[in-house]
Length: 473
Ligand code: FAD
Image (cartoon, rainbow, N blue to C red; front, side):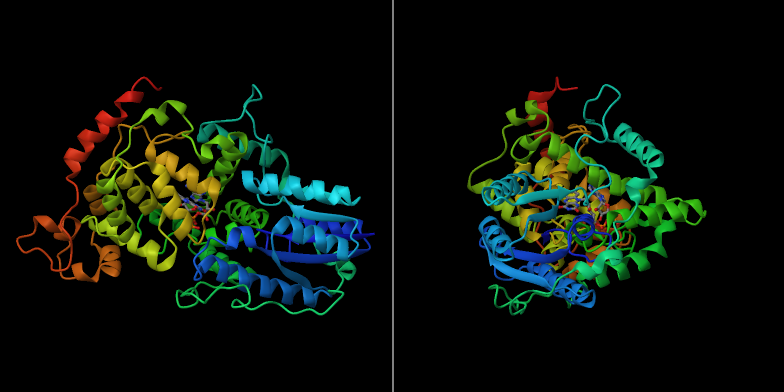
């Protein structure tokens, strides 16, 4: 029998559930990746993610080649292309790792139906997370909507089921990997209609090699993670999010690594906190799976009654936020970081999201959409969860009356303005005190805008705006 393994957001040739199961159950295994027209068509021609994927696909092909196989790479609408390829290879089945986003779920249902019409099977496997769907529930059998009890239940289940972290090995049956039957050539970035970006100049290495190098570097600093993770000028976090997004690292490998460090007494205070962050990722994936309506609606329905700012003034304020010219240095530096690199530090995602919603009164969905376009690590579940958290509309969210002060956040988390100076050179000459609120300085810096909103007034407007949901627990 012949199986076709369809790679999507799992671009690695180790610890891979679908590939493992295919190799175990089939005589011949083909591997494929589709550059999906439906996803690529609306993107700008320079997109760091496409370049990251393209390079990761090339690395995956080389790795599979070492093992005796190939990656067959096609471009087209995913459903028709994968069904046609299965037919061409006369595969009995297509195996893939599960993708929980609503659009992916319906695409996969379509693929399964198309394959079934030809008498072929579609099977999907849990790979992207340690626990999926209904695997972590309350004692009453309900999905959690608060993080801490979810995390406790998640950790309890992991401890009770060590096999949930076991790798899905490839090597034992790698001989069943088959080379592409016809000519095999990978398309170039230009062939798929894209141009190179500044990805390499930023020092971002795609693929398994890039993920492994970042992990190794982070393990050396993980013990300090809790002390450093909130300071954007400091190398505190792992920067692994883009690799988690495209599956060039394995979540099981990451969690096992953390557990081993903790067991050896080498993880310090940082390792358990980092594990918590990985559990946040699964929490939001679970929330999206259980409540797909969050894609367009507030998790707490009462919050959809809020009247957001609209019209040309709101559009201008939104443009100023996107382009980093609000006049609030930490917010602006953070947006420049996002625009220039496709990354924004987690503390700053909270600050910029809060500023858009609670200082500018703009619908969180506008900001969510902008992040979706810009973030290298864009992930529907985590992005939506993060935005709804900051906007106070989500599960386990920041209470609506708690409003970040962009100046005190700046003084606290970038005390010497090092991060601000890195991204806003026009403020480099300001002293450590003035840099957080340059409009208060005797001499205003040239080439930097005055604040577009007064924080105290904006705060009062937001409290009034959110009053419609005052009754919400
Ligand atoms: P580390 O601190 O090293 O954390 C390790 C991993 O844990 C991350 O790579 C990520 O997979 C996960 N993680 C950490 N924090 C969170 C969190 N709050 N929620 C979910 N997972 C988390 N993360 C994304 O991966 N994609 C997004 O599109 C995204 N959008 C966000 C939008 C907003 C408004 C906010 C507040 C947060 C968002 N996050 C998103 C979460 C978080 O900011 C990033 O995961 C993190 O900054 C990535 O950097 P890192 O890999 O160095 O993180």
